[in-house]
Amino acid sequence: MIETARLILRAPQPHDTAALHAMWSDPRVMADLAPVKSPAESAATIARHEAYRATYGVGFWTTLRKDSGVVIGFCGLKPGADDTPIAGELEVGWMLAAAHWRQGFAREAAEASLRWGWANRDAPRIVAITAAQNAASRALMGRLGMIHDESLDFEHPKFAADDPRRVTVTYAIARP
Image (cartoon, rainbow, N blue to C red; front, side, top):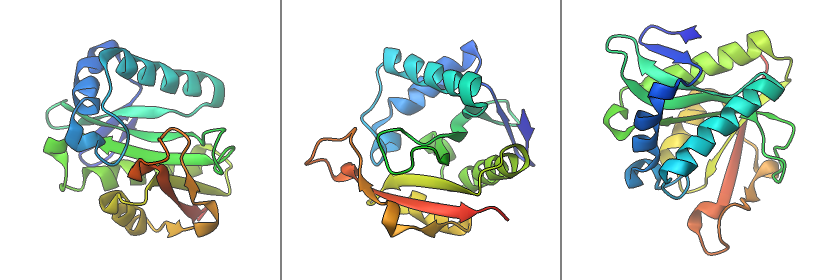
C-alpha cells in the first residue's frame, strides 16, 4: 500500500470492482484510452493486473481518496506490452473517474507510483504511453518530468487502422 497526502494506492479488492467498472464504462474517461469496457472486460483488467503483480511484482493499484475512502481510479506500474516498442520497459499509467479530474489526483498518484518504482525496481527509466490526441495525459507526463521519446512512438496494435487512438506517443523519465 502507498499513502500520499490525499490518496491511498492499494491492490484491488473485490468490493472495488463496481467503482472501477463505472470508470471503465464511462465514455468520457475512455475517450482517449480504449473502448468502454463490459463488466467482464473490467474484471479481466483487474485480473490481468493481479497477474502482473504475481509475475513481475508490479501492477496498477486501486486509487482511493484518504478523506472518504472513495475509489477514484486505477494507477501504478506494469510491464510494457510485448507487442509494442516498450516491451520489457516499466510503464507508469493512470486513470481517474471524471468526477475527480483537474484536482491534482492523477499527478499525486503518478508521482507516488514513480517513487515506488525507483525504490523497488532497478529499471533505468520508466515510460508512459498514450494516444497522441490525449492532450491531458501528455501534459501530465511533462509535469512529471517525462520527455517525449519520438523513437518509441508507434501504431498501437489494439486499435483499428482508422482509429485516431492508434497513433501512440511514448514519454520516458530516467532514474533520478
